[in-house]
Length: 194
Image (cartoon, rainbow, N blue to C red; front, side, top):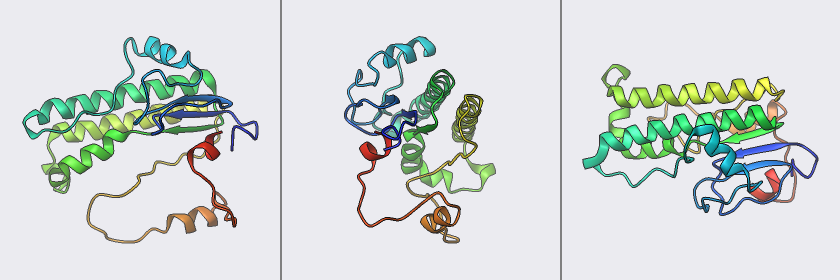
């Protein structure tokens, strides 16, 4: 929808099978073929920027490979962040979506360790979250430097932890003018980005 309205969009790691033409770029994530970018040349552009391949989806977690898995997830977040920041800088989208699936996977697999007081959380997990924070900050800086709007959302599809209060996301979005309700349902990915 944004693209059809003439807005430049950038999408990094969205879970779709294949990219489709938009006014901007799509570097798909989970469920996609490795070359399924739009434009097709985007994969090579990203690999030049990274000096190697774009990170694959996190592998299946095995407790016996925990340390290597956490290291790989941390490196993947760093590389995805570099790719998204470089694309934002180079292509200057007006809307940018970047997803770090590693955060979800890490929380599902290691929640028992993350539920501890901060000082008791293992250092490699704190390092993962610091890498995620740095990646988000780099993307935000690149997006703003490219002329992107000054609104940035960092969101999760669900939380991990004790429930201490409620936050009604749709109500807040509507109150702030970011969400307008209408009668007809809208399909998410194609209608949002196309």
